[in-house]
Image (tube, rainbow, N blue to C red; front, top):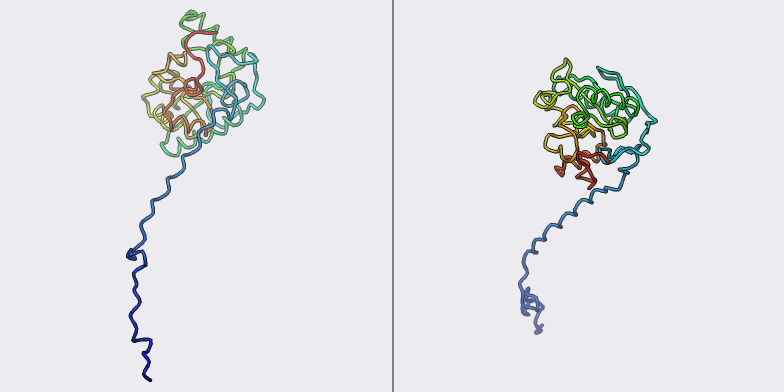
Length: 240
């Protein structure tokens, strides 16, 4: 036939009408990860003596001042003086001391845990009688102002004994393990050496306070050492 075939026509252009060439798609930027939610400092009370976040110090007495925890138990640990703790704190203590034994072969014993208002009165009065009130106020809380009355505080010593209730514990393997690892189990070194003006008490590398793993992890992450500074609460060396 005399008509042109379809193959005789011009080859269609592969260039879009806009004149731009076809090429690989541009790489997409990875989405910016969302910032983690801010820590909720109001999740628990810092005033209720039954709260694991309660802050008690020289200007902040327990209310009521004769508070007694309702869930005291005796953890299965070694004791120098057998005293109970709040159940949650006791369970955390058992786990922490088991980890110390398994990881480093270190053994600990409980020097002191819960002390009632009446017991703290006797402890404080004895310190005053031996050393005078001014000295006693640097290392022994007045009744109603002691963390031990919350059932959340623990005094630990090495077993066998070494630097018991003395600042030198901080430089021993026992003290160093506690300082590095207690936060993982919800405990805080409550009276650091460089925070005496804030906490009101001398350095106590044996005194740890249970605050729960959530708050302990946040303090560790942020580098804040005291509850007073973290929550913006009054502290210091003067009783109110």
